Amino acid sequence: MKVSHSPGVHNALGQIGLPALPPPRPRPAIYWLKALFGTPLNALISLALLWLLWFVFRLAADWLFFHAVISGGPEACKTAHGACWPFIAAKLRFIIFGVYPYEEHWRVFAVLVIIFVACGISMIPRFWTRALLVLWAAVAAMLIVLIRGGVFGLAYVPSTQWSGLPLSIILSFVGFALGLPLGIALALARISPLPAISYIGTAIIEFARGVPLITILFMASVMSPLFMPKSLTVDKLLSVQVALIIFIAAYVAETVRGGLLSIPQGQLEAARSLGLGYWKMMRLVALPQAIARVLPALVTLFIAFFQDTTLVTIVGMLDFLSTVRAAMHDPNWQGIAVVEGYVLAGLVYLLISAVLGLYGRFLERIDMAKRRQQPSQPTAASARTT
Image (cartoon, rainbow, N blue to C red; front, top):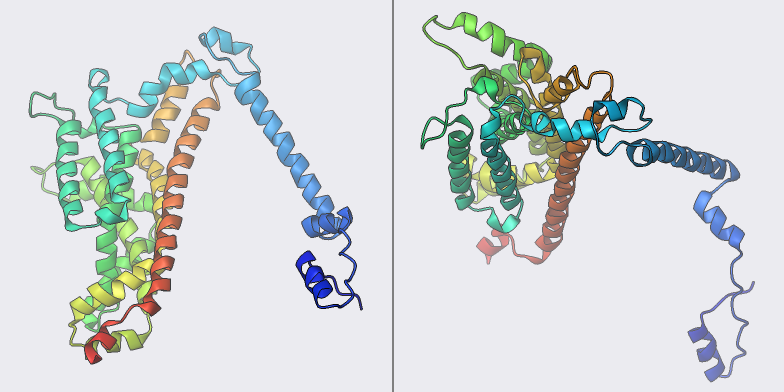
């Protein structure tokens, strides 16, 4: 049997007086094709899929760019065979800001900038301190002043005129920011050794998970005012926001509960043996590990929740997708711009979801790096015994 060696091995054999073997022959191209595609059937399927992707890409490129109308008005788009981008240019402010007063668009634009900047700062691990909570409290107060007005010379804008992309961002980000701690509390309540607390937590979770989101929104916006005194007026945006918080909290609770149950009981017993109480054990030992383990599921939940906020249009609220539909129903553009608005909405949702997905994978890498470093670091138990 012939054995191939590297050039360094050939030189070593020659130096010790042994006969050098011939250099290895280069592998034929058929070897690399088999390594790339496998069997002939797999190669045929791969080539067919590549051709299909290329065909779809060419059609999309022709419609989006090569046959598209870049400038002009509705008349220029009637005979076009591609996208009508003047529609996006003419309706962009309405699609983003909705029915918010036109002269006050700078306020909601500032709201979006502040939210994205604060989220960017919050994504950096070195800023995960208590000062971050103070920052978000200041940001929340600033956002309410800007978007609502009524103080500092700003015109008052009722919540019924909050619409477009700012409304979708507010509903999803505030809903998840408040639903996450509530979901953690519900998860702890469900696994509580006290039967009364466990039953209450289980009932809330099962009710919120067993009812469709549309039903919860209808109950919050239509049914809840019927149970209130006539002198008390319930803001629709507030009721819908509370409904979304409860809905996402139920799913977060089950996800976090799965992470808590996956922690070995030996770690919890070791924490008790060190004298840690229940709450300190959960805060320092159980919850950090549970949240790190279910982090991909939490990111998926948030992405799905951000996309599910489009259902608020059922209760008469103009979210981002609703303003896209409303813009396309303009008599001047109706029947001319049919897909362009949905393309823009899809790109916005895709961009935000992709950023969230990338950030979730970034947090996973940080957690894996910490786990690799843990064996080399002394634990609390070893430090106590030494």
